[in-house]
Image (cartoon, rainbow, N blue to C red):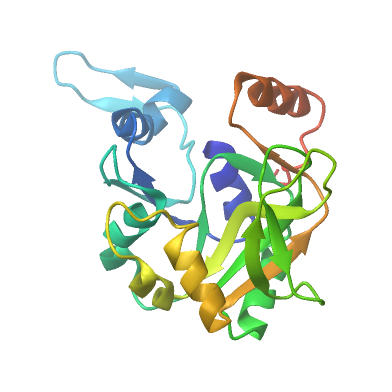
Length: 224
């Protein structure tokens, strides 16, 4: 999650809303104790006063919301509606890293009439592929793919309009199901093809792959 947030912050996106569920307490503790874990300090154990040796931190505003451990992806987003306002917002699942150009992604979305633009990435094997129109600008459906299918999949980096939230029924709504189907019906789901680096972290193997990248020049590390 920190890596994703660092990546977004590089593009000037520093106001984050984290939709917590499973182990949300760990996420809360991480950010509540961020400075304590990153900075040298002196503490007066009698008074409780703390002197920080340096001002290490991030120029971020982070809101952590407990959306419930059983809430589905669409339901989590719907629960945060009061925090999102009426502006365009970026959305990511938090389980994948990429070097997608976020400036171009946002510009592509703004140039369209879509309510949601997803990043379409190449990933062979175990994912369902996207069915795009001829010029790859809009999503027309989702389909299962075979092992040798090189089709594009949903990479989980979105730019969205608040109208998307009106298509989510409740806590049990999976974002990829009814809301995406309703966007497609209205011609409001656009795509941004990305042929660069993208890697999910869904398994121990994925973790090892990403850690190897981090040790040897991670493609997503574009910050100083």
